[in-house]
Image 1 (cartoon, rainbow, N blue to C red):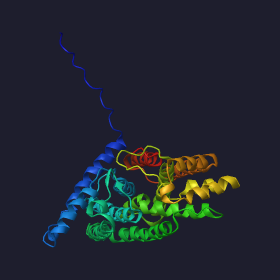
Image 2: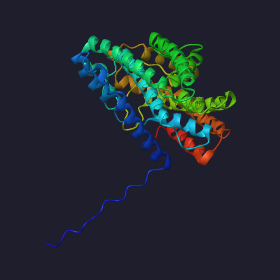
Image 3: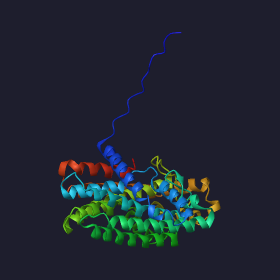
Image 4: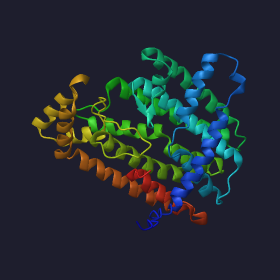
Amino acid sequence: MGLTPFISAAPMPAPSVEQAWLQLVRARVDASLAELLELPDEARLDIRWTEALGYVREYVLRPTWRMRPALLLAGYCLARGSASVPAGLWRFAAGLELLHACAAIHDDAAEQSVLRRGGLTLHHLLAPGATGQHLSVVVGDHLYARAMETLLGSELPGATQASQYFLKLCRYSAVGRYAELERGGAFLGPGGVLRTWRLARLRMVREGLAPALVCGAMLAGADAELRLRFARVGCHMGLAHELREELRGLFGEARGAVQAPRCDFLRGRRTFPVAAAWSRALPEARRELEALWSLPAERRDELALGRVRRLVEESGGRSATEHLVTRASHGAVHALAELPNPNGLRELVQALIGQLAHRIV
């Protein structure tokens, strides 16, 4: 038998500039988060809390693209005109991630979700049933306090003002979250599209992408006019991302590897594609959509899901939402063209916009 030839694996393609930059941001922010969640002053408070904090660290540090920190840094560099950033900016970025983790923990408990970023949700890790949900809410409060310590202790000029701006938007998004949980999302009836559009915009704010971009500019000392231009970019970009996520949430398109699969119909969430479909549908299709969304949870099976998808597709809800994704993406790119472009950073942000709109990451 002759020698077996050595066959080398095909070379992996080199990461794009934005992918390499995202990897750098992720590594730096994850390191900051790990440091922030080492809390020796709490070590002797309660042994059960020490055990719970281990679950919290694992939850917060699960693999994900740190897009909020990436946009925070991009906003800072674009407004500042330089690619160098102070050390405190990494801590501020980690503080934003702690705030988002707090919101995610509370959302998981409210929706009784099972998975988050490829692992069990925190309330399932802490304890079974209602006890786990109650404990996770307390953990969320703890992370909120740690986030405030981090943001205000970053020692950056303008940190207080930027934190106040971000928290004000958190208040607004909480109103949308309340309405969504209380009503189940979109209203299938006259005026439902407008209401659902407002909810989608508030969910976009809750995701924190647009606020992070503006906070970066604020920390760099941007004046009111420049901050407004950053806000236009962020709002268009965030809306494109949110509507794309709502399409995926209904039609089950492949999500990024670090994301857990979901189905908004099975979870009882009525989102913009459904409201858009209802507003365009014939009376018979409207009645069927209403009946399907009125089904109890145990009867929302794959057969019913298939029918919902078909009705939304045939009635134009999917195409209408895709059109808005495209329009918002183009709006973000056009607004971006009005921003400064030090060292080609604007092209980097444009690539990030494309990734968010098409959910490549």
